[in-house]
Image (cartoon, rainbow, N blue to C red; front, top):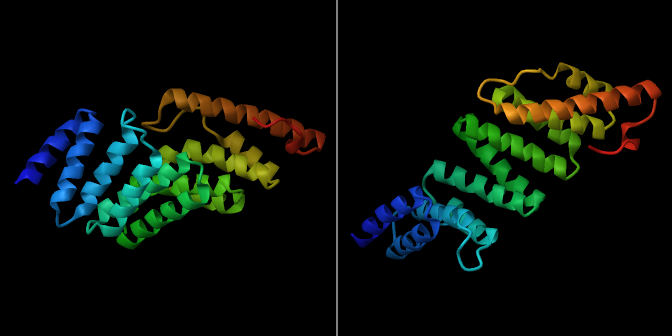
Length: 225
């Protein structure tokens, strides 16, 4: 079949990072019809998201493909991946409320399927980021803590975000306690350079909190880091 040949060629282009060529072939496959167009729609979105030399590409074009893929796919993995990528694109557009809605669908879907894996943990973390960005600090705290509990590799990033949320709601002593408990060594498989950056930020935050608490005035009076 022509569509099968196109699909195999598209896969080869995609694996080589030739997203523009892959996109054209995936779109041709869609035109031929398929039992599960969700996979092709997802791949079109993926190629658009990662190809920067197409004619006037936008993240929103990729978003449209991801939303369609989630709506028509018969495969749970494709649905979950499509919802996550839609949330990711919306985060890049700073559309935090909409992004949170898609990520929550990923979380709910994973829980329904009882797939609390690394993919689920990342959805939890980024959902918390969306909540925090909307000023929903108390809600975000719950999800950052869950991310730390289920995924040690997300613990450093989530812990820093938890500290910042605690500061926002005035829980300065609790924030200081977390700063003091932040380990000097990264967890296994965590990027050492990134961990050093996080550790440095936490130490600076610790010094500010200590100074503020000792002088009995709010850290909100200090310049944000």
